[in-house]
Image (tube, rainbow, N blue to C red; front, side):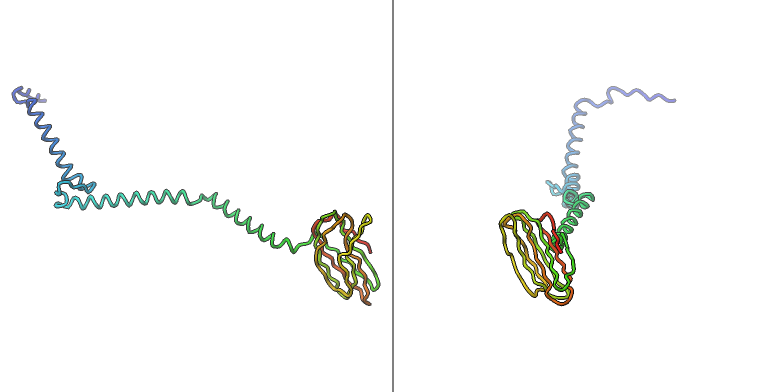
Length: 215
């Protein structure tokens, strides 16, 4: 093991020399930053030296790549905000399907009937089909006579009040609506004037509390 010789005090740099070295180092670092680092990293070339030695072009490429990367990042963030999550997508699909089903039901509903009455009228027989309705109630109907023709009288009477809606003879079908001006039983009197049995089918829906059948 060898001991290093103790330096001579006269060989150590003076304070003035240290200050001069520090200043020179700072100036050198500044020159390197201005002529090399700034052109190469940020395309900043105040002296023009970076352009001459090709560093400024390198910096321009880096700056352009950084700008494109930032633009891509911002675009990805925007897409993440605008794009619904799987749960949201499922919810939207459920809402759309519910709307479609509801629309289909609404389109189908007018073709459905609440009550259907079917019976056979022998030649010469009669029958009555009435709807028990309150004042202001509205009911829709459609009826058919298969196997022959019928006479009918669509009317109502109750508590001293009466109304004739429609009468017909030799009919095979009919449709329309009844708007009750007063409470009571509103409906048809049927008679088979043909020589063959007739199958009657009456479909009704709307506002009424009961269907009254009398054969």
